[in-house]
Structure formats: structure tokens, C-alpha cells
Image 1 (cartoon, rainbow, N blue to C red):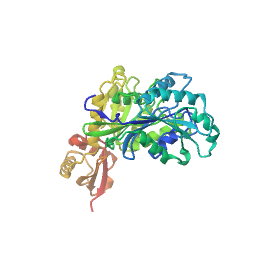
Image 2 (image 1 turned 180 degrees about the horizontal axis):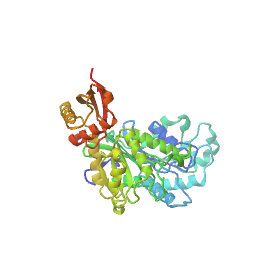
Image 3 (image 1 turned 180 degrees about the vertical axis):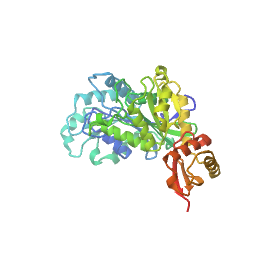
Image 4 (image 1 turned 45 degrees about the vertical axis):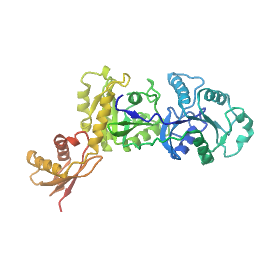
Length: 435
């Protein structure tokens, strides 16, 4: 994709090991906060979780790998195994994690062999070492032939200063400066509409596990790129299910909360809709969250090659409250029209952060008063922009009670039509009495 520059050349530090040895806890300690889902479910992490950071001045990519499936039962597990090997091969350094509270298992031995065969550099990490129980099995640890072990306890933050120093010894100096994302974009939608496939199409790089089973992605996956003089960070969120279908305390309940936080922390929401299936109530509820949090948005009509008749008209009719959202037909599977999607994201962001001169807003607020039917007791004095993201307009009137919600909608739509900078953004109207 031309005009797209990504940061996949950063040296990757990959955390690998069998399931439930504490890889995600180590990942969270390294990056400094709770990021991967951590609970007592075996094999909780389903996707590689990626985070770019500076480690003592060195720019690196930290990757938390899912566990390896030695007896894969379905296509998801087979694809996860293939991705596991790919990450070992591309990593600058593999952190091989074993459980210090238990004996070395056959799975540990086989993963150690995979790492020796496929990785460039590796370190052996013995986690859960706070109780010294690992001393009972120390000979088994050395028998892995993975070098001198580093003993840590992620749960208690023990041993991480030494681990960081050993990592830095293995990672070459680089002068790459990590650009902090300017635009945060969450990819949202109900399960199985193609969110992960769309992210993969954008980067043309394996990031998330993609299958036909709903709800495959359960963590959020971040990846950034440069486009149109903007740095864009994409967040590939787990699908939002209906509240009644998600049992409290389950993995999906964690991911649903994470999705809501992703929307709240985003500048732009890309709402992925399955054009081959039509519009569902759950699509409308997710779209309403965009309105609730006053986010800019782009509607991506995925599977456009199989779209039902008049799909765009259906969306216009059923989702009028986000009529400002650019609508882009795409095919994630065929990697089609991705440039148009990126362009729409850029336009939406620039509209969302636009600063319109007061003279321009004042002119059109005066025009609105003369061209629209407003209550006879209402007098609009002037309007001015007081904030961005979203553009926020203060309207000064004699009696705010006469400037009702219907009039606010009319005024908002009028501004979008008249002021090109605001056409792709939600607009917040604040009505004040002139003192």
C-alpha cells in the first residue's frame, strides 16, 4: 500500500512458553501496566498481544504469544501454532518462560526445541520463583539447554531489574524513535463481521487469528502506521455481544469492557458492518455507543462483493444519528479499497479536530436564524467554537429553554452542510444565556 509506512521493523521481544506459566503477567510487568487479560483460565490469551515501547532508550516491540497447542482440535489452534513458529523466527529475542512451581514438562522440552531451532537469541525465564520451590527441579531447568536461567516472580515484581538488563544485552542499539500515535482508532463491531481480517488487510501482516468462528479475537491488538502525515494506532477489539449472551466473570465479559474502554479512548471508531448479512439490532446498539461517547467514526461496509441490495440506503435509514460518518465499501478478504478507508479515517480525524474561525461560525449562525423557523421568543446573538474532538460550539441566546433538542439537531446539520471542515464529525452544541 503506497503512502503507508509501518513500524514492523522494530526488534521484537517475544514471550513464549506453554499455557498458564505466567507469560501475560511477565508481559504486563515489562510494559508497566495491566494490558493482557489475566485470570485463572488456562490459555487465556488467544492472539499475540503487541506493544511498542522504549526500554532504557532502545525502541522495541514486546509480543505476548499464546501457548502452543500440541494436539490442535480445530483450525483456530492450527493457525495459532503456525503463527507461534513465525513469531519465533522473526523475533530478535525470545523469552522462554517455564513455571518454577512445577516440574519441567514434556511440553516445556518440546517448546525449548522449537525455540532453539527457530530463534536468533533467547533467554530462559523461570517464573513464580518467589518460594524457592524451583530449587527442587533446578537440574531439570538446566537440562533444557537454554542457557543460564533468570528467576522472576511476576506476581510479586521480583527479578525484573536483572531481566531487563539481560534483555538489553541481547538487543542491539538502535536510533529508531517511536512516534507516539496521533490518532487512536478502534475497530468495533459485532462478532464475526471481519474486524481482524480488516486489520490484517490494512497491514498485510499477520496480527490476529482469523477464522469463521464468532468471537475469535479476545484481546485488543494495537498496531500503528503513518498515513497522510498522521500516525494512526489501530485497536482491533473483540466483538461486542448482546449483554444477555455474556456471562459475568467470563473471558468475553473482560473483552467487552475492554472494547468500551477502547471506544472511550479512541479518536475515531471504525464501525465494521457485514454488507452480506444486512443490519442487525446489535449493529445499531454498537453505533449508538459512538454517539454516546461523541466519537468521530467511519462505517466500513465489509464483504461488499457479496452485499445485499441497497445496503447503504438501509444504513442511512437505520443509523441516522451517525449520518456524519463517511461510508466506505471494502473487502478485507480481497484487500480491496483499503486506501479509501485510510483516506476516510484521515478526513474524519481532521474534521473531528478542526478549529473553525469565529467569524465563519458567527456568519452561519446568523444565516441559520434568518433561514429557519425558530421560536418567536428566541433570539440567537452569536456562536463560537470553544473546543475540538468533538468540535464544540457555544451558542449564546436570550432564553436557552427555547433552544430545544430538535433545534440543536437542525443547527448541527446546518453547520455540517455550510462548513466543510465539520462535515465528517459529531458536533456538540452548548446553549448559554447571554449575560
